[in-house]
Image 1 (cartoon, rainbow, N blue to C red):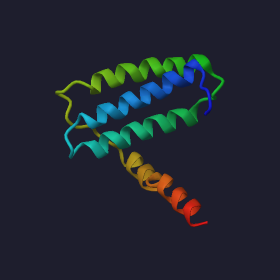
Image 2: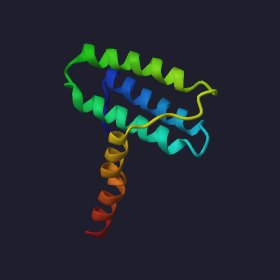
Image 3: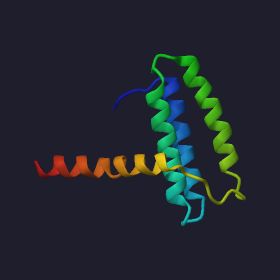
Image 4: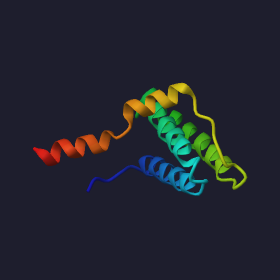
Length: 105
């Protein structure tokens, strides 16, 4: 089992919190919220260096504020862009494909 730095644990905790928030939304809106969360984390992770601590801390603070806003029970839906949908189609099921490839080998 690998050990994570404090910053890595904070990012993972924020991601888990975001996924719990998705599960609290109406079932019809959950796929859009899930796509929004996955896209946001992945694109932000690819946009900055893992060594840029101040940028990561900034994104953590911004992400916490954003999740607090979305955790409001009155927020029942979110908007996703065409870019997010296309990204989701390209990256959907990647784990299942890898699992099938390794289990059949």
